[in-house]
Length: 215
Ligand SMILES: C[S@@+](CC[C@H](N)C(=O)[O-])C[C@H]1O[C@@H](n2cnc3c(N)ncnc32)[C@H](O)[C@@H]1O
Image 1 (cartoon, rainbow, N blue to C red):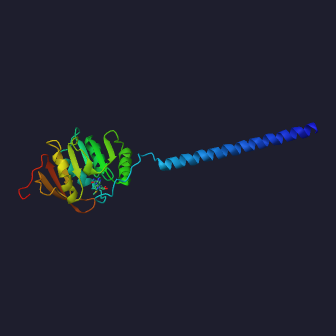
Image 2 (cartoon, protein in one colour):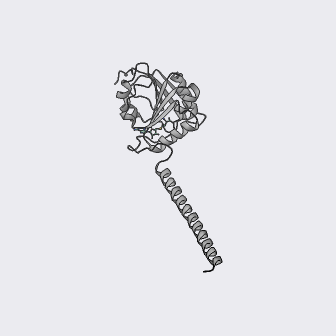
Image 3 (tube, rainbow, N blue to C red):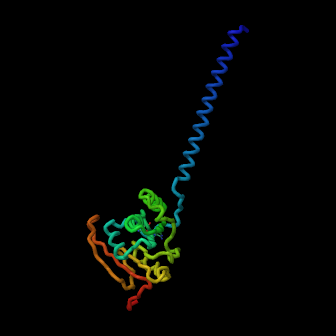
């Protein structure tokens, strides 16, 4: 074979190798990107949560002006530990951390709400103060709380009584719209919210809970 022909063949071969190498790199990159994408889909940045069972109440967020009043009613201070049982999007805890610098723990059963709460906490940069966990509120030890917020159905409040009774004396319980039936409140308040133009009922209780005589 003529020398120039050999050189041309080698050049063709080299070009083919380079093309093949580029193709292989492209394929490898695509595989890497695809696997990273699939991994991200199955392991989102937020912790994976599982549905424990269906929520016992639907999600409705407490309006912010109502939250402010509830926190004032309970005299929330910096050294309080506020629990929100069924924390929805975490708004009660986020506002309390922003306003008073207190710690908060939110328990929520619905995985979408758990993620919404975590996102809310991160967005508002209160992750050092507020922790969110997926849990069924009826399984919890509430002894670390100094204030508990409840915006739940009346029958859920009743079911929680044995857990509330075990809390430290002096712990405050603030209820939104549904009170603790059969328990004497320290204070109740009715308020027309400028946010949703609805009337909201709020009640404050202190541990130990005082049963009404009719019970
Ligand atoms: C009316 S919303 C209140 C949300 C929030 N606390 C607020 O005031 O903005 C009630 C929340 O309780 C949650 N929930 C219902 N049953 C629950 C259970 N057994 N354990 C934990 N969370 C529950 C619902 O998913 C819902 O987000």
